[in-house]
Length: 140
Image (cartoon, rainbow, N blue to C red; front, top):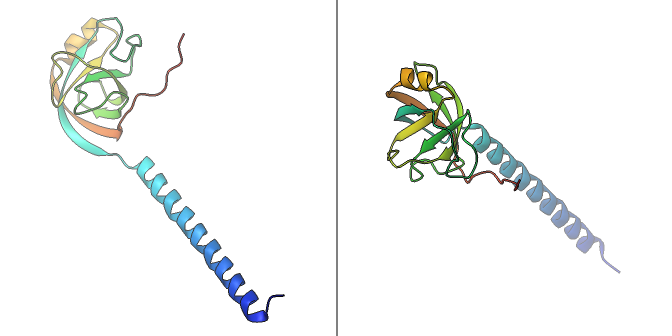
C-alpha cells in the first residue's frame, strides 16, 4: 500500500506533466497558426505575360491563376500574391517554368494574347504566401 507522501508526490508529478503537455500543445499550435498567416517574404520581380495553351511543367493544362518561375527562386507549388499596375493583381500558383524565366522573373498566364501584350514587361511586388511542394494530384 502507498503512503500519503508518495501518493501526493505522484499526483503532483502527474499534474506537472499534464500542465507541461498542455503548454507544449498551446505553443506549437500558436506558432503553426502564426506561420500559416504570415507571408514568407516579399520581393520585387520582373513580370511578363504569356497566352500560349499547353501543358505546364507540373503536368496540368495551362489555366488562369498560374505563373511560370525559376524553381530556384520560387519552387513549383508555391503560392504567391502579385501587386502591379496593369491588371495582374491576384493570387497565383507556380506550376510552370520556362527557358527564359531565370532569377527574379515570373511569367503570368493570361487567357487572351491581347491582354498579355498589353501587360508587357513590368516590375511587380510579389508576396510569397507559401513555398511549394506542388499539391498532390490524382490521376485522371
